[in-house]
Length: 341
Image 1 (tube, rainbow, N blue to C red):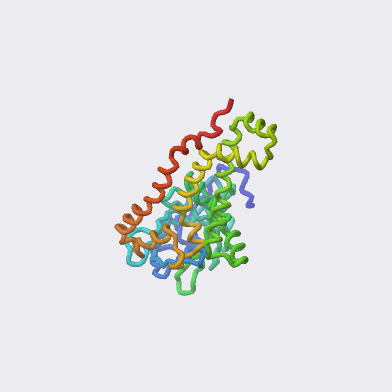
Image 2: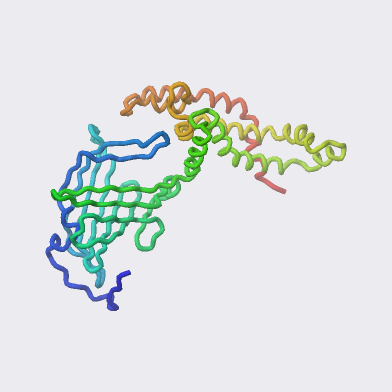
């Protein structure tokens, strides 16, 4: 870590010529347009490639000081759209900063989805390539997301590599590490099922839904069965009933409300599931589930929304039949174990 002067209040006299003091950032100043951008999004059945067009504007700013610390920088705004689609695909603003005394490069970024970050790297003044990194939880660089993104799509690491080319242009590659709670287990499961050669079959999907549904089943049934009168079970045991007979003849019939509640929740989750079906079953026409078919009805550009609406309405019929058939058990099952004493 660079040792700054003991006097943290004395400010240096900055040079008014920002461009002459930008170091490796000097070649990036200006307004740039790229038409060959590519976003690579990892998917279970192979990478998904999305072409994009980008306009990147970088304007010099006056030198900035933090006591003895001195920065020269560029204010930037980048807007990305898909080919033949004027709607914004990505929008980002921030600053590129260069600290001559330490060789540090900072990138601050803010995107209108409630997320900001600061990436840090080091380079020499004449460097033609440099890499910056932001890590969630770091004290000297970091990533901050709004509560929803932090819970559902947590960004753990952001890396950007910039290359300055001999013809005066520049390009960048960036990687973002996302952690999706609940979906993190899908990667090892996918590898395991591929090793067992059952991926792409209904068996793999059944195993996934069974495993993910066990936690809710244990929670509901434990609370309900714990509330059953012990006197009934003890009387049956005194009369000579075995543990299996008690479970089969007493506990199971008395647990019908809890089992019905769990059946409703599990059925709705399986019926509406898209992600697991896409990853473990795929999009083969001969084994598509309802959610996969509905997504395909929307069309490649989202133009067939009327078909999606009609299909979604029809797909509601079976869940409604299941719910109304079991609704008399639903409330009793949900309240199971909620009150003790």
